[in-house]
Amino acid sequence: MPDVPESHPRKDSLSARQKIVDGAKRGLLADSAMIAHGRGEAFDYLLGEKTTESATMAIRRVATLLTSAERPVISTNGNTAVLAGESMIRVAAVVGCPIEVNLYYRTPERMSGLLSLLGEQRDSVAKEKGPSQFKGDWGEAVRSVRILGDEADFRIEGLEGPRALCTEDGIGLADLILVPLEDGDRCEALISLGKLVCVIDLNPLSRTARMASVTIVDEVSRAAISLLSEVLNPTEVEGEWDNDAALRDSLKHISNAIDRL
Amino acid sequence: MPDVPESHPRKDSLSARQKIVDGAKRGLLADSAMIAHGRGEAFDYLLGEKTTESATMAIRRVATLLTSAERPVISTNGNTAVLAGESMIRVAAVVGCPIEVNLYYRTPERMSGLLSLLGEQRDSVAKEKGPSQFKGDWGEAVRSVRILGDEADFRIEGLEGPRALCTEDGIGLADLILVPLEDGDRCEALISLGKLVCVIDLNPLSRTARMASVTIVDEVSRAAISLLSEVLNPTEVEGEWDNDAALRDSLKHISNAIDRL
Image (cartoon, rainbow over all chains, first blue to last red; front, top):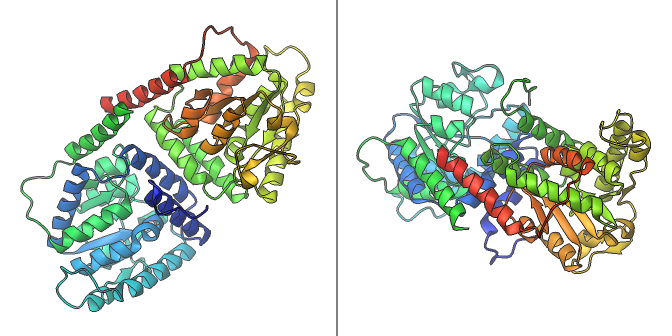
């Protein structure tokens, strides 16, 4: 695909698409990862490629949960690492939690490719000046983000085959998992284990979106940037989180957008 | 991806996805073809993975136009050939028109791969018994469907680079082009040349959908099967075709589906 001019109204979407195409060429993504990305593109298009107010509320809630959890972990798959790996490392540095590479279609090649990619991203983020609101040594905080996933020494109960594998130190013992772009079955299994599962999913109708403790209906790289601001300055949030209400709000947003056309 | 059981409610969608993944592995598809397929999946999901009434009307209109055109041609890209190549050959056999492989991202490898694939599909369709309503020798009708695209001896005015290339005998001199899954720029250029352009596009908001003479908002393999029935028994259709009204109807369908959830 040719370079997209800075002024293009859909520049972000087109450059995300290019990252996915490049990631697939480098063998980092599952066969159907590009198809999943395309589905996301369509929903994002219907959402106006903007973070809605209910998504902002969900991001705020996830930030509060992440910063108050005992053992939080951020689980990333290929698409997340390619689209938002650096942002997720920044979030992990602020929260002080590990990142676990966890794949639905797990192969040794993709695992090692993604572990390397995240390692490179961590090196690059460690060299940044860091967010102005961050107190402490940014480089040290970033370098101390552990990148897990290599050693699959734990199985998620209720799942079969390679998709059940994870690390004990990460997802295995976590009380909260932020898992963008998760599969429905896995989301359900993690919830059944009593964990808080926060997801980022552009399809408010997906099983993942409906199963999760908190669903951020937003594009993963946009959501990750907002999430960084929020974890730097987490706010007290009152009351229970009504995830169904947030999903209904996203659907209403899509339906209104269509009606306006 | 594992085999999908016959009883799976979304079997058609999942088997289409598998065909696209296989086609990509065989090098038949452009880099972003899987992403485009994913976008289509999302819209089809919102349409309930069914042919709407306005899509049926559009298919009927296209059948009438195809059977009454002077020089119709069916233009196929990689996704169309992989998902609906055999159906399109059946339609071409009934209509008596050529099929042209025409790619937005044209490479010699993909051209020859798709020309071979369509040749194999034609051989296989020629061996079928043929539709009961078809009068004549089915095998002969199928074998006489010309598969064009190899010789790019014509340029579509208003386009630059390889995407302007086509064959004179096909798109070049055609008065009507049925082009599923077309790019917006190319659709516009073909319309500017005074041709009737009929498209199949799951996104009723796409520039292609809005530019075309007749837009079938439906999944390409489902639409191709209905189109075959219609060209076997084309009906007289009265009055002008209001494409905007058909697109609005599709949007309403999506919006109602969302509101019901």
